[in-house]
Length: 139
Image (tube, rainbow, N blue to C red; front, side, top):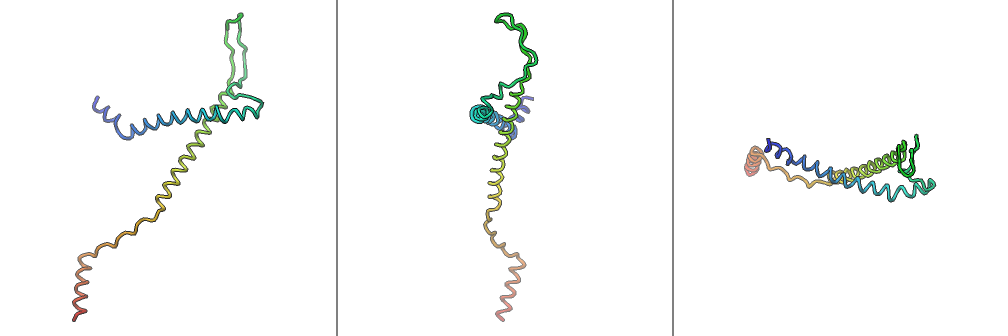
């Protein structure tokens, strides 16, 4: 059973998939940073210094006893939802452009003129017929 598991785990497809998951996780962090640190601050500034992650609708305020929270606030955090949607759209857009670039490169390879195929060697029959023709031409 251990040998079978090792064969399964070391197959090319499984290893490739694992690499893809790791790279995808790292790419997700890059896109999240792009959204949070580069794209959202100007949008927040345009919307009056609003930070989407902080947008929420408080349905019930927190109950406090001095500095101690007795019951936490109940809120609908729609700003975080907006942020996650923007993250998703940017990731999808980045992947679209990546796939589009790869497809364009593949098309270039396919469209590249192939070297002309060498003429096939004559068959035995053709060689024999050529010899017969040449002998008849000599007579």
